[in-house]
Image (cartoon, rainbow, N blue to C red; front, side):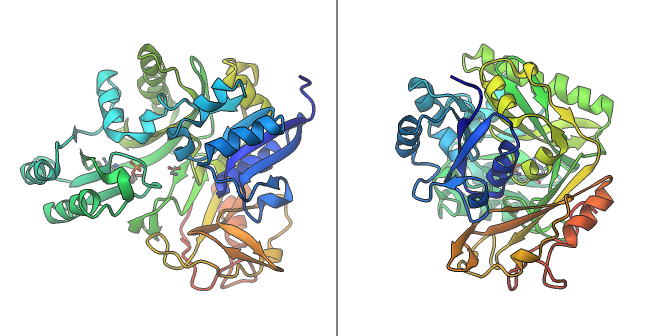
Length: 432
Ligand code: AMP
Ligand code: GLY
């Protein structure tokens, strides 16, 4: 196979996948990019396979076989949990991401907390209740031990929404009922874990892992709550910035030595070597990292600020990593910073309105320091309308976070001539 003119398939439709397409399009070896299903923005750089959903693994493998796709990159968690990588491996089609077994670190929080316990990876105190009744009695017993509160987490995948941080016993009991009885977050809430609530700074650390070795992306911070000042419900992420300047060298070494390396050797020793992106969601407590979640994929909206800050042939990096040689394509971190602001539909995250017009798309600055990544959008005649909760991401770049933030917010509308949706949800404090 020639390394020129490669055909690449990206799986997903969010702003994270839009950023991947943008970065892949800069790789000299990329010939053509397909994305399943894609959005109104990706259509400019790739061919959207509108009828192929990210979880439709049969159609994805058939498409890859019929069109001789050289390499596939998976964005979201669900296809990994469904075993897309195993299916592609069996068909001897190259793909970037962990197997179903290796991605259990993300799709079962029960398994992940037991794994961290087995390998001495620092994590919050955790209880795994047997059933609803057991959960209720454990919550009552914990109230005087976990004085900062209790975090109730769905065991399975919930589109990033199945985590409820509770201040008191009553709200924790309600959260358990909503998850286990009402299935507010879907089948992922059938089982749950209870965790001690920690207080600290959060940081997302992404490692590109080839089974044995790894390289890091710039450290990032994600803003999960809907509203300014970290108020309102948890969301899939309302913004991000990188690099996370508050992590010093000592702490980074501690994260590598105490979290990433034991993860890689531990999962390998259990017979499920991990290849792909390990996302460590950390809280820094008393100057030490504690893992509050592991994910088995790139983050959203972290990817949107990390990819503009690295100098690397992205396709070569991913192919070298899945072939077990990540260091053959070194990641060079650029100077400067990036800030991403998410424009979400009114009603997000509970009940986002759909079909709303995205205004002023043509008014985004053409400066190199401004990038726009679409999420839930589609073309409707001559307009672009939203199809999901998170709609657009505006990324500003700059020498500093302040400069990057300015470049981003100058391109967020409603008060100025820039993209907006009526009554959109947008945080005005990203990177502040
Ligand atoms: P997760 O999906 O597990 O990252 O949780 C979503 C968000 O909930 C995190 O980014 C934190 O802000 C919060 N969270 C999760 N676990 C804890 C914890 N043990 N203590 C405090 N906050 C937490
Ligand atoms: N930024 C949160 C996530 O990707 O899960």
